[in-house]
Image 1 (cartoon, rainbow, N blue to C red):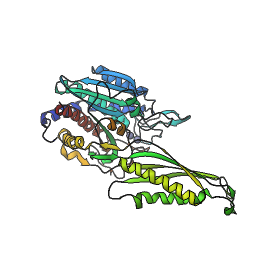
Image 2: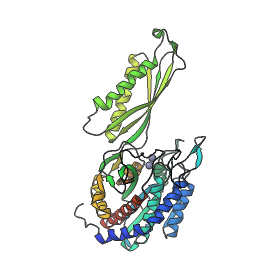
Image 3: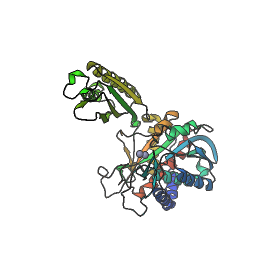
Length: 420
Ligand SMILES: [Zn+2]
Ligand SMILES: [Zn+2]
């Protein structure tokens, strides 16, 4: 991989100039999208904005891919391979508390309720950046050896209504067919890095996320005489503690991080009744697909065996969420150097594994993928203390956006230069 000719310095300068020229436009798009946020699978206005922009640039556009998704196809002047770039479009049911003139006041319907809506995860920035990349690349067609596929993806955050994630929906609608890319790149803005810094790592970058539910069947009785029934509350307490020994005592702590959280416990109605049943919910996060499978096996065994020892019955159900966001190692070793050429090596950092999850992972299961973080915390704030993504106070230092435009634009052209 290292024998491939690096992209020319001149190209990175041209991209940098082009990104600077449209910086104000990218910021204006971001503010417009920020002020008009849309929840998962409701991204009609955002999708129309992206589609209209791509069409104006002479890019072939398909809408309604994966319900509200948009796909653009930009053909370069030279023949070559295909690379995909992805931005997610959805906002969150969060009430904005950031004091900016373009703060969101939007409300929408969410699972039967009226909720405030905010781009608290920064997907407004992702859409604006990718629209900027489309404009930069449309102006550099003579440098493009092949085709760039733009994916404006809905529902990254999860719609909680039984529909698949946006990435899965787009795949179901054939987003990776005709033409099929050989790599996919994407970025996520983060409060955890300073403005304009880029952070990534090969292998597991973000976690797999599965939800779990444990139902414990005991036998209801009077709170004064537990021996007359089977207590699901004490059984649950033992299960909760034992589950914690899976990551801490049973898995090799030096290999890869994992987290098992029980986050809800519901059972019982009054102080003097031992309830019949109890329900717990939680989440499992891992950075390795083998560990992911292993942890589930151990969990089930632990819960069932402990319940049995108490005369109760545990039923464990796991709802599969997104897989590990896995950065293809050869692609990422190459891509990290390419990013260094595109935006300057001093901007590139190695990321720690992050326990949050991303449905980009589903795209990266189909073709080799590389995902990276773009820092957006203003220079006068500490990234360790800045309000995190999903906070009502999450905010973006907008000068960082141009580095996202430069990074993805350069990666796309550089990648196509290296593929026959
Ligand atoms: Zn998010
Ligand atoms: Zn996000």
